[in-house]
Amino acid sequence: MSKEQSENGFETISVPIHYSTSELIKKENPGKKAPQYIAGLTASLAALSMGNTLAWTSQISEELLEGQLGFPVTVDELGWVGSFMPLGAATLSLFIGPLADLFGRKLSMLLLIIPATLGWCLLIWPQNLAMLYSGRFITGMVAGAFCVLSLIYSSEIAQKEIRGALGSYTQMMISSGILFANVMAKFLSIKGFTIACAGIPIVFGAIFIFMPESPIFLMKKDKVQQARTALLRLRGEDYYVEEEIKEIETSLKEYQMHSGMAIVKESLKKSSSQKACIIGLALMIFKSANGMDAITAYTSYIFENVKMGLDAKYGTIILNVFQVGSAVVQSLVVDKLGRRLLLWLSAAIMTVCLILVGLTLTLKEENIVAEEYHIYIDYIPLIALVVFTIAFSLGLGPIPWLMMGEIFPPEFKSLAASVATFVSWIAAFAVTKMFLVVEDNLGGDIVFYIFAVITTIAVVFTLALVPETKNKTFNEIQQSLN
Image (tube, rainbow, N blue to C red; front, side):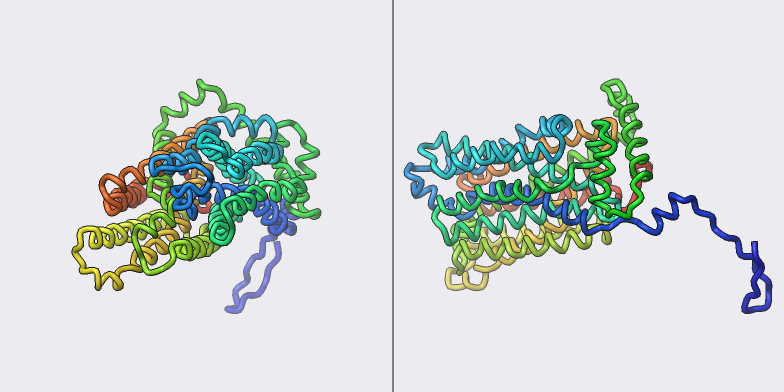
């Protein structure tokens, strides 16, 4: 210890802080973030294909109804064309976890390019309705798997300081894929724009093949040296990897100790685990049941029926531009504003927007407003849906995916995430299929009022039960659930 003279004349005692060698090395070399951003962004290119798949029907609904594929499609059949995509995604979601553990995150995504190409070929050259349904189902399976695997990969390669940002890239790429598909569909034939969509998984594979495998997966397979190499590529050559290697080893040992159905059953007896399951499942249902998937699938169809004073396809593109922009903003603020605030604020704004769309349709359908005054309300649906899309992209779209990895206990995280994803896609399937049925039988305004009720419930649920998980360890999150 050394004595120093302070400004007020008193002697102060200076105590040196001692760091271990590893702590000093880690303090001086916290790791480069750029390689992680690049790897996460590259992995999320797979989600670009999901956006293409979601939006495939968005701009061509009217053309499909007119029989431009060479065979007629009814409104009910159009509902199946739109909804087979989430049904396919739900089917594979139950098996994607074991697939990723068997082949690895990287190889699994690369292998999925094969069925993706097959599915898109069925959509490029459909000869009948069965081929159309099959193409949508297969591309849906691959799109859902791509989305989950890119999220797993990004979360496993990222340091905790940028985990939220990398997780947000998936939603940003989904939005970008939707925009890409809708722009292509506006200016190309159905076959031309479908070929453009089919090329995205191939481009993704050509870039992603150069990225490292997840260090956590490599450690699971006892490939310690390969895990070190992967960490050095992701953190920089000067990064001290041994401490993180030990952390991963400890985490995997704890996971092995807490694996098995007996331990899962024991864990589910805890109130914190039960609340985590309720929250995770509910958020994934809210994510899909708010109407965003149906609006994405039938955007131009909706705008055509609203009869606003703007070309429906241009309206769809405008909507998508704002969606991409808000997804970019979300990736910048998610680790600053927090998950809970963005969730309830997102759902609240979406509720207001859905009510506005519903009211506009009611005023028009019931002839409450004279036709000469429609010009004053024609653009309300477009503006409301733009704000709705922005709000969705900031909170209720990406955050449920992110929170699944944060609140589920490690002893059944994979199982719970698979079930939650399955339930979410089933909800998306039901909403997408029933959208046109309800719209045709009860009116478009009723559809939007139903969605508004769901988002209102999401606001109340978030405020009452959802904890903040920003910058919190798993133990801190569990304590907040007790």
